[in-house]
Length: 217
Image (cartoon, rainbow, N blue to C red):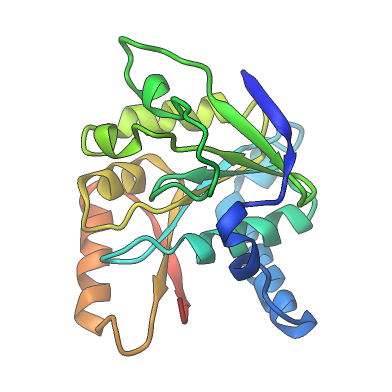
């Protein structure tokens, strides 16, 4: 695995990752606590000694919402959990350096090391999608998404995916491969019918729509 020095994280998202004030930050932390409790479920009693990695897709119906995913990831990290933020929408960085990212890892015939970027947010690690993300996004498989969670669980207790949107093939693959989906809803842009269809879409891949969160992004 290749690591890079700590950087301002996650680059272009740094301003939008900041909730802006203590009251808003507390709202995000409360959301993180609720999500953490809901996803832990009965495993607290059945496997009390075993750390359980949890995976969450944060997205919307038609577009990725990386800023929302970032805020969720930051809030989870602030709870004390080691957290990986997976760039599954578009490049979250303004770094022009070329890297394979996740493309090589997802292509079984060309396994590659995953590039981890430590951030200046304690316990938050960025997992880059890489330059070839758009090439392989449409060929993602549910089993490979699950395998990535298993792979990352050696490093992170939480894996938060930033996108892709549910309307995409990649979004459906990730929705079926993670433990739960958190749907960001922007008032005026998403209708109840959109949410109903999103719920049906997630159910069609045997996913778990955990809930919705209002977003202005």
